[in-house]
Length: 227
Image 1 (spheres, rainbow, N blue to C red):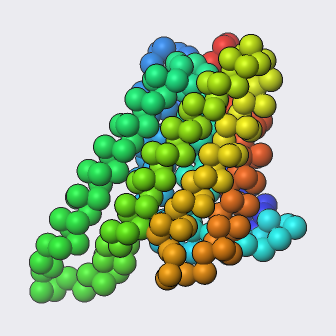
Image 2 (cartoon, rainbow, N blue to C red):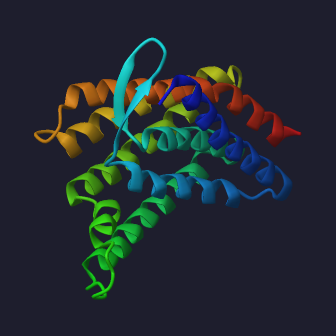
C-alpha cells in the first residue's frame, strides 16, 4: 500500500471521527463516538491476521491489516477525553472490551455450526472469522492495556499543560500507547510463528505515521466540539 493511499485512508476514517465529534457537540452525548470506536475495534479483529506491505516513502514495512483502523481509535479516545473526561473515556473502553468478547463468542458459534451441504464457502468463512484464540486473546489484552494507558497519559498531560498544547498531549499520549500496543500484541500473538521484530517495527511505524496524520484532525475535532 502506497503512502498516499495510507494518508487518504486514514483521512477518510479520521473524518468520520470529526463528524462524530460534531454529533457530540450537537447533542451533548458521546453516542456516535462510542459507536465508531466499537466499529473500528471490531473491524480490527477481522483484519488483524492479514499482513500487509506498506510503503511509507522512507521505508518499506509489514504490519497487520488492522493497523490503519486501530490506530484511529487513539484519536477517538483523545476526542472523548477532551470533551467528556477520562472517566467517560474509560467507560467507552470497557464497552469495546465487552463488544469484542461478544463478537468472539458469536464468531465461534458461526464457525463451529455445521454448514449446509450445498454451502461451499466454509473454508473462506473459517479464514475470516475463525481467529486463532491466541491472536484474539492477545488483541483483547493489549487493547485494554494500551487504550487505558492512552486515556491516562492524555488526562495527565492536559493537567500538566493547563489545557494548552493540544498537539503535545495528543502525540505524547497516543505514540507511546501505540508502541506498547504493538510490542505486546506481536509478541503475544505471533512469537514463535512469524518473525516478530520486523512486525513490531512495521506496526509501530504505521501507527506512528497514522498518529502524526491524525494531529490536524484532533484540532479540527476540538474546534467542532467548541463551536
